[in-house]
Structures are given as structure tokens and as C-alpha cells.
Amino acid sequence: MASLPAMSSPPEPTVPREPEIEALGRIARGGLWAVRMVFLLAGLGFTAYGAAELLRGRTGLSEVTPGTMVTDHHIDVVWLCLGLPLLPPVDWTFGRGRWLVLAVLAVLVVTPVLLGGDDDYGFVLRAFAGLVALASLAVWRTLWKLTTPAG
Figure 1 (tube, helix red, strand yellow):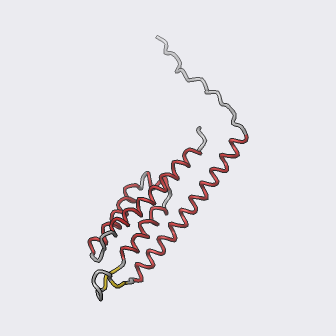
Figure 2 (cartoon, rainbow, N blue to C red):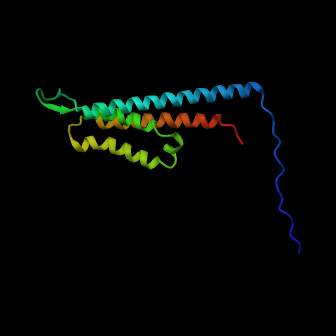
Figure 3 (tube, rainbow, N blue to C red):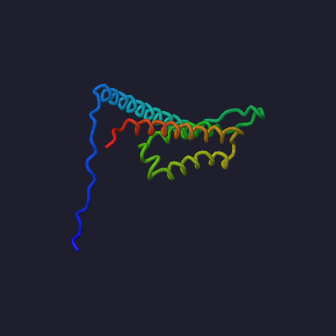
């Protein structure tokens, strides 16, 4: 019995896009690229500021008990939680490196609590900062994928 040749599907007809649509697509991709560069620069700035303040080791007076010194490192770590997720490539952050990013954020959120000297809302501020950074990247990635031509 002779075998039949494999059937291939006919090529789908392509409809050329209007030049206006192509121009608007290029403008949208350029704008989104600029937004990603702003995120990258902001991430560099937040991370550098948080690391510099953390290394400087500043302390402040506690408002709860006058005359007692407490560390303000939780504020410095908030900047790290906000800046670090903005640095790596977005596809890596939500792809292969997602567990590493989440682990680093978890360590940054929980470590100041374990070290002591953390106020009541420091944990919430750090977790919210990490969430804001990841949510911003998720929205950016969705918009970027929407502007990618199918094909």
C-alpha cells in the first residue's frame, strides 16, 4: 500500500497593513522602549541609593522611646526592593529567573525583621515596593507583547 504524501496546510493569506498602522506601531514600540529605559535608570538609581545608605549605616532617634537609637536600615532596603527587580531583562525576570527574583525579594523583605530594629510597617513597605516593581514590569511586558507583530 502506497503512503500518501503529508498534507500541508495552504498558506494563510496575508493582508498588508495600512502605513498608518505601521507608523503608529513603530511609535508605540519606541515609546515602550523609552519607558523600559526609564525603568532601568530608576532601578539603577534606587538600588545605588539604597546600597549607599545601607553601607553608610545611618541611625536615627526612635520616636517611640526618647534617647534610644534604632537602625533605619528598613528604609534603605525598601529602595533595594523597589530597584532590584527593575534591573534584569524582563523576559528573564518572568521566565527562567523568576524564582531567583522572588527569592531575593523574600530575603530583602524578611531579613530586617529577623535582625531587629524594624518598625511595625517596614515589612509592608518592603513587600509593597517589590510588588510595585514587579507589577510595573508585568504591565510593560504585556504592552510590549501586544505591539509585537504576529508572525
